[in-house]
Length: 243
Length: 243
Image (cartoon, rainbow over the protein chains, first blue to last red):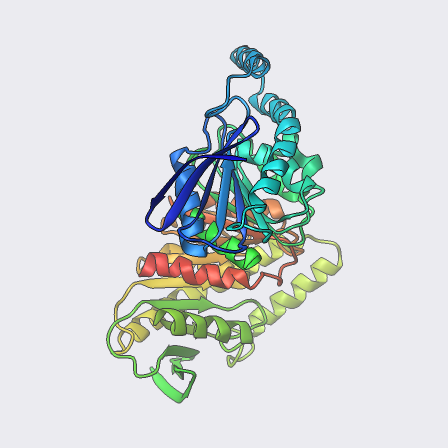
C-alpha cells in the first residue's frame, strides 16, 4: 500500500493510495489514532472513488461518526486503465439495447463478471486499510447503490468483516443468489420510478436478502434521484449497527 | 371542550378531555406557552387513545420536539360506548372470514364506514385543541397505521391544516381514492410479512399517494411488529416537515 497524497479540510483527512494496481482514497478524522469503524463505499457505473457524491458521503461519515471511509476505483473506472474486454462487452450491450433488448439482464451479466474481480480486490483493500494504526480492525460497513449494489451484494455475502450494509438501485436478476447469503442488517434503497431497474426486480432483491433485520426505503424519482434525507438515514443506520 | 384530569411525568403534561361525546387526550411540554406544531395520533383497531404504544409515541414527540400531541377514541373504542351497528358488522365480517372470504375487502368497507364519522370528529378536535393557548395554530402532523391509516387517509385528504403524515399498514382497496388527493409529505410504513394487508395492496396504496415527497419504509415481520427504529424515523420526519 503506497500513499500518494494527503490533504485536510474541515477536520477530515483525505489520503490517496494505490494497492498494487488499485487506486483508492481513505478519509479519516484529522489526527485520528486507534481503531474505529470503517465504511467501504462502492461507486456507481461511470463514476469513481472521488465523484462528488462519494466524497460528500465519505465526509459525512467521518465528520459525524468519527469513522474511517475507503473507496477504490472499479476496473475500467476513474484512474484505472480502460479494459478492452469490458469495453467490448459494453459496446455490444449498447447495440443490443438499441436493437430492443431488455437492459436489466445485460446489466446483471456485466456486474456478475466485474464482481469476480472486485470481490477479491476489495477484500485485499480491507486487509491493507485495517492494517493502518489510525483505522485498525473495527467493525466494517458497506455503502453502495446501482453498480455499487451489483458489486456490493457478492462482496457483503463473501466478507464476514462487514456487519451492516446500505444497498439499492439493483435487481434480483443480478444479485438474488448472493443476496440469499447476506445475513447482516441492510438498508435497501429503491427509486420508485427507476428507469433502469424494474420495480418488481428491486422488491425481489430486497425480498431475497436473508437478513433478519432489513429495511427498504423507497422514494419517488428516477435512478439517480435519491433524496438527500436518505444520506441522513444512512448515517443513523451505521451509527445503530457499527456503534 | 372539557378537561377531566391533568397529570405530569418527566416533563410531559397529559390532559384528558371530552369534546361533546368524544373522549381525548392531549400531551404538551410542562409549562408550555404559545403556539407549537401539533400531531394528531390515530390508534389501531381494538386499541384506544391511551394504549401503551400511543402514549409512548406521544411522549417522544413532546419530549424531543416540544410539540403538542392529541389522540381521541374512535367510535366503539376506548371510553366510547359500543356501537350496535359496528358490532353487528364486525360479527358479520368475522362469520364471512370464517366461511373463507378475504379479510382485506371487509376491513376496507368497515373503515370507509367509520371514516364518515371520524373525519368530521377529528376536524372538530383540531379546532378545539388549536384554540388552546398552549397549542395554538401551528403546523399539524398526523400519525396513524392500520385502522389509523384507514381513517387517517380520508382525514389527511380532507384537512388542509395537516402538513405531513406517517401512515401505513393499510391497503389500496380501502384508501386509494382518498390517497390520490393527498399531496403533503408522507412516510409510509409497510410490514413485509403483513398477514392482514396483502403486500401488493400496501405498495399500491403508497403508489396512489399524490405527494411529490413520499417515502416508503418496509421491514420484515407481521402486522403488529413495526421495529422500534421506525419511531425514531417518525420523529425525524416530523422535525423535517413541521420544524
